[in-house]
Length: 400
Image (cartoon, rainbow, N blue to C red; front, side, top):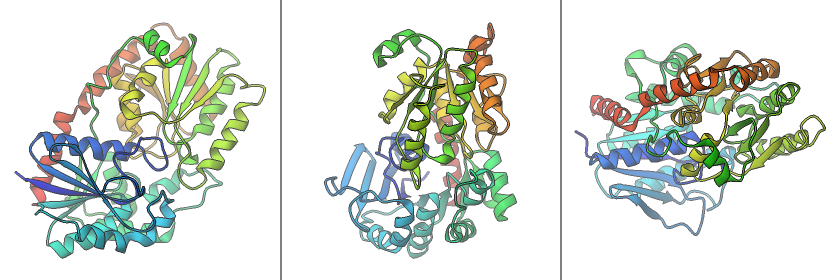
């Protein structure tokens, strides 16, 4: 049984509200993993880059779980591209703040993986790495106007894969991508899906949730997450425009601009939503604390996840746990997170008409929404934190 683990999350703090900047499912997963480990008696320190001069250097969200804010570059939010050159400073900052022994290092994302290789080698510890997204996989389905992943990222991903004692994939599909696109050694790949807090994300009264959120009655589609080209919010708007020719549906988008081009993307989407065929039918709201997201998921008739790439798609499972059907792109981990035909519908590709037809089925076919809601809630029980933590502890034991 391990007693202590150091997590590395260079580019984003696990305490940041998901849907803000670069915070998303990865933040939620790290935070929940740390809480679950601490409950099992495993001390977890999460080292992240200080992005706010007012935050305390060390915070303790729960007994046994600390977040250490490491100086590296200016204490402000920075695009990921501007953090690439901070790996060495972050590494040295972490080394200077290691105040207890650890059994292993677990890095998250390719930037942290680069730091993890250095720290693990200097400490003589095994390294586990979770990528959360892979450059080559994202490039296969990126929008045509988006630049491909930089060579530096691809090279770093290869190096981290080669130097890790265990690369943890969220789904069997991600494990296959690691083998097919990076030549990863299958004997050093492990599969461990993220978990879902089933005490927070659970079925509830839709009408009551709408009242709490100030939402009107009528067919409601929800998109929740960061706004950037990768997430396909543009597909959601175009699908809604087609759907509204037959169904008076509305779209609620909850989340903020993220990453390179995120602000420009949000401006384009707001302008598109003001055009006559969508005027008054789309509402944009900022990201909310993770616990509050559950009410939004319960308030919706259907959650739309038209992402162009997802290693897992946590919000799809959180929606399922709230017994809300999901319509999602049939890509990456969404093929695992969404039980097609049982708890939601998967759509091949990103043609807005195809997505509109799937949304219409959920909203209009008698009995389908009820059947999908029941199936979604059953499917989500597979992702409870007890099973997830058991699996992760098993993987840790295998490399220590």
